[in-house]
Length: 266
Image (cartoon, rainbow, N blue to C red; front, side, top):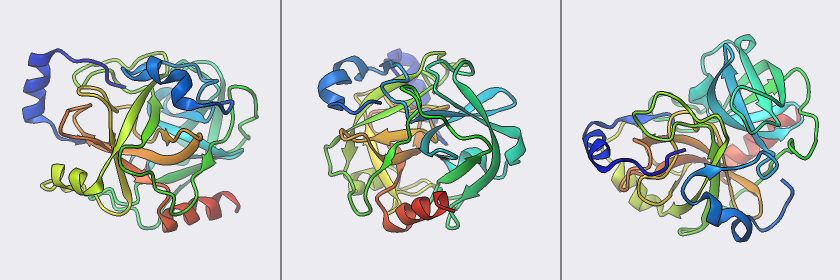
């Protein structure tokens, strides 16, 4: 999760950037938004739906718990990886430590997923053991089909992604950040020349300048102030660049929403 970045280093990176695939209910923004606006530490009990996807004991992406045996993440994070090599960590604020580590038995990507355009960039991971409910482990409530957040709406993204584009290490402590929804037309204009596309499967949001999602955050949850899961972090150009919002999979889109609900009931 990106915080502030030194101006000169960022301007150099801006010229060279390429897309990188990327609780107990209470009033989300009245309670914690002042603490998270810069990408701040957050306890897992504030975001108990947050999970991590690990490969060979290393964090690779975020995820969201959506049912006892299922987490939702980015397809680009897990396709075409072997399910037996993946693990899902739940119930911990600390990267690669604590909580419960669950074996993955199945990777199910959306059947319309396109690895080039990143359309329908979502996948569900089925775990052998369930994510046992506790104050630190709770499934997210999926947003209703068609209930897409309006432009300007405040949302919350969380994860263990890098705190700057050129940084080697990811933070140990879970981070969260308040972001605002950007009109799809403006977002599409920002990425008009990219192979990855902004379309009706996507939702765009951004934080303040130089604050946003980064490598390691992708696959992670985007929630509204009702704690409903509205998006999955999909990709971005750079990390928090002012003119380049983060792109999320829009979980309110009917054929994505229905796919999630149908798959987790199997």
